[in-house]
Image 1 (cartoon, rainbow, N blue to C red):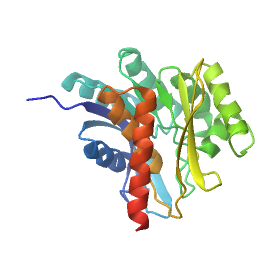
Image 2 (cartoon, rainbow, N blue to C red; image 1 turned 180 degrees about the vertical axis):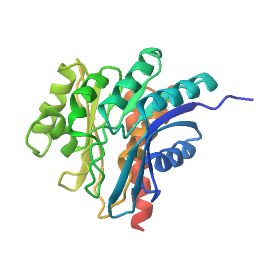
Image 3 (tube, helix red, strand yellow; image 1 turned 90 degrees about the vertical axis):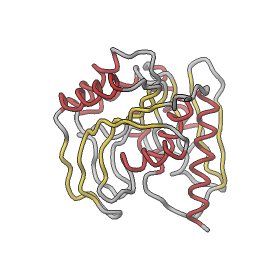
Length: 249
């Protein structure tokens, strides 16, 4: 029997089911990939707002990760909500022991409804975590916050901000264009020493929570199956667009 590829999801729960681990597992299942989880936070939220967040103790997050990595042959790791600087440090300590597993990090700073999901003092720790990731996937507001820049429209401003993160040691940055304007939503893959690659899809007049979780998990699924980064991004972009199209029908 052929072994299925396996992704470890490190993220928070969402009681509404619109984002977080629920969305991650749904996406991985759509790609035929198995999932294990390390829960970083339990959130109380609806589709309209975050009501409460309980961060899981950092040592317990690390224990969950180590247990999952011991129990399964993990091919990729997808990281979402981390909540605190201490949790980021705990996650980084586990990744240090598994440098060959590609890591996709969706730097979740706030929910789409506006709730804060990362402590303000945790940004510096998050930057250090970037060095251990194959890819980080910020949207335009997140990219501006991570670089301390103004929230400007792509392509020039966002590309410059992404290059800042690459210069600081990030291996690759996928700038998500969903918050931009124009007839197309264009995501841009920025890597050191490589030409910028754009991934475009028609912009749809529809909103859906958890698309960031979905995109990062889809990329992780493709990397887990042995795909290269650009192909994984392209396939993931198409998957998310198809999901939005179905919602728009």
